[in-house]
Length: 101
Length: 315
Image (cartoon, rainbow over all chains, first blue to last red; front, side, top):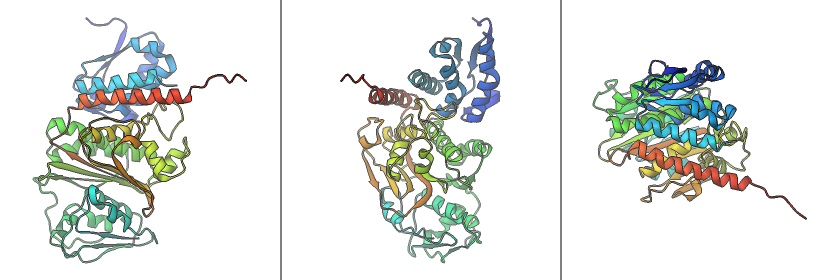
């Protein structure tokens, strides 16, 4: 079922199949994720077609959102169609950011 | 500067090669090679190429070793600014190697990562791990090393051991100075070890890093090497940390707890040298490895929080 009032960001056209460029990750956060969350719109990060991602990329894309808004913001970000490698990387970043200062 | 390529220089026996490097007089580079045979880890070639970029006055003695064509094939002569004595096809498609490559920007890194997998003929499972390692290590150079010449990279597949050997070298500020922006360390070795601890970055003292840096890249690479029982070395300043092959597939957040050797008496390398061997037989499922990394990372954060926790002083 599609989520209502959510912005879907298809990553493949932006990052290519290996999401590793931190500049791109940061741009996605600043240009898309933060403005949408600020307006009360949830985020769906669509990883369809992404074969792999680095911890650095995921960190640049979501860490500051968690730091700025608290752990509860994680409930408003959805990770769609992730392969196991990417799921594991996202889980690591989500985990250590909840322990961060 | 003088550097001599011995008959054999790989991670397990690289200490004597490193100890023989003479960094004095950076205006010239004199390269010599063993007359009988030369066989070396790609990081050796990366080091020579990186030094050559710092001077317009590089020379290399006549390479007499029968295996001397290797340094031509890996593309060293253009870095030295010298014509090659050997005629070799630019890239033998069956060779499974990445010749010396200079990467100075994020865009060049992206192109390199796209080209890398077909050059090494990697199957998908192993390509994920190697691409990941390359990305993290080269981005480290681009973001932290302040190296005017970027990263010098090379890799080679060795069929006998079914291993990919990787070298990534820069001539930037080195790990100690890079870490010093947020963490003072007493020595190059201490700085190297600190850089291997998850969450330690030169960009901030905050747990979790900045919006751009988590301080986890080298810890991830060390973890991958540990689990796959792959040797891994970092050389910066006068120090080297070498992760040794170990059958203990246990991840440690503290590099002191890993089976390793270390030295603080090497000739000073202005920048950072990283070498890694990846045995393709033992590459663990990447997702499983990441799960292990997650629990080790969490343990590191818990320990550091406990260390920072202070009780009220009642007197």
